Amino acid sequence: MSNPLDELYRDIIMDHYRYPRGHKKLDRADMSGEGNNPLCGDEIEVRLKLDGDTVQDLSVGCRGCAISVASGSMLYEIVRGKSLDEVRQVAAVVKALIKGEALPPNINIDMGDLEALQGVRKFPVRVKCALLAWTTLTESIESFERQEVRHITTTE
Ligand code: ZN
Image (cartoon, rainbow, N blue to C red; front, side, top):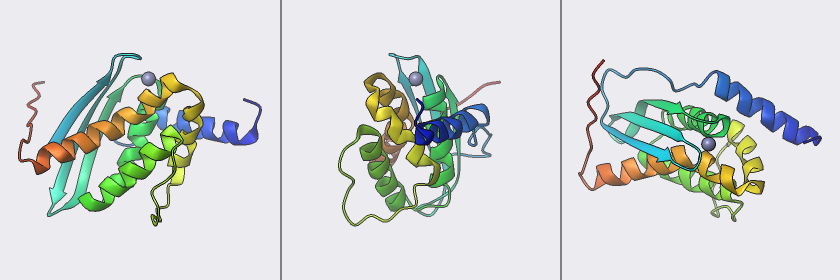
């Protein structure tokens, strides 16, 4: 890990891990989903509040390794304020980036900190950690659009 780019990526990931952006409470959620990655013990809950088909706000609660938490934190930053169509596009690009696959054509999205996740493709075990937030998000959207919304009730 002496490559300066690797070090930059590691710093970005550690910053998101220490200060996850999406850890907060929503007054209501229109869709939500939970995911877990048994290989590593990562757990995540994504909740979205919509305004029409725009993600007005969301929360991402994640417990696990640095990669899974950082990926969820970055998801929060890029998804907020986007339409569900845009969210689906972003998710497709991010999944390709993480897996090292060819990016979908004609997509122009500023990936910001998400670029830092491409380092995980060299570590197959870590790929699942990085994908967890995105898989949970896209499955929640698909479930929502099939009108099989899962409402999660928390008691505290
Ligand atoms: Zn993990």
